[in-house]
Image (tube, rainbow, N blue to C red; front, side, top):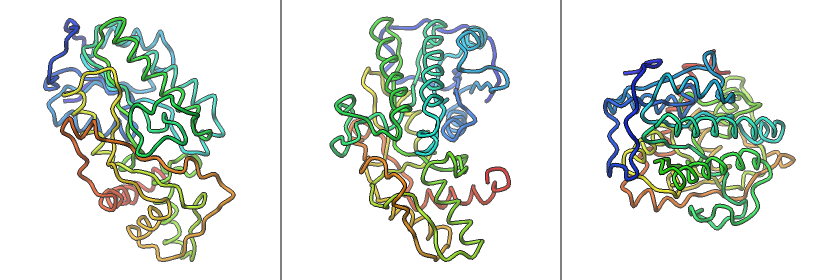
Length: 332
C-alpha cells in the first residue's frame, strides 16, 4: 500500500537490531521516489507488503532542514531509504559542481539527522561507485574508500556521497542508530533520465541510437575513446538488493551492489545498437573525457550475504529501450 503519510508513533530504537528486519506492514519512506531507483524501490516494497510513504518536491524541499524535520515529525516513518539526490553524467557534474556538492550534502544530512531525531528504526543510505579512487585496484572492494584521489569529473558528487556514508557510521557509533549504506554500480532501466545534457551513458546511448535509427543516420557519436570499462546493473535488480540489505544487513561498513562483471563503453554501445536495431557505425569523440579507466565493483560481501543479480545486460537494455519508446513523448 502507498500513502502520502499517516501519523504513526515510531517503535523504540534498539541497540541490537533484529537479525532479519521485517518490512511487511511497516511504514517505509522512500526519499526520492520519483527517480529511477526510488520508483523501483516503491514497487519492490509494495510487493513486500510495506506501507510505502512518499512526499513530493511540491510539499517539502529536502535541502531545507526545517522542512524535513517538521515533515518527518508528522509522518513518523519506521524505516527510510535515502534515494533522493541530485544526479547526472560527466557533463552535468563538470558544469554544476556547486549543485552536486551542496544539494547532496544538504539532502543526506537533513534526512539522516531527522531520522535519528524521530526514532526511525532503520535507514539505508544509497551512495555511488564514484566514491572510490580513480585508480583503485580492480575490482573495487569496500576498503578501497579514501585510499587515493577521486576521479575529477565527478569528485563533487563523490565527496557528498562519502560524507553520507560517514554520517551513517557516526550516528551508529554515537547514537546506536541502525543506519547502513549501500554503494550501487552504474544503474539503468525504466524511469531513467534521457536528457542528453545531463544523462548517464546508458540512457544517452539508447536515445542516440534510437534517433540515429529513426533519422536514417549512418553513424552514431560516442563520448571518449570507448576504452574505459564499466559495470551496469538493471534498476529492478538494484531495488531488490537494497530491500535485501535492509532486511538482512546491519553493520557500519558500506556494501557494494553490482554484478561483478564489466564491459568497455564500445561494447556497451554495440550492445545498445543491437537492441535498438541501429546498423550504422560508431564514431568516438576523443576530445571528450573518458572518466576513470575502469570501475568494477567487488561484490563478494553482498554475494556472501546471499544476493546476486539476475538480469543480463542485453535483457535489461531491451527492457529499458521498450520503456523509452513507450514514454518518448515525455522523456525525449
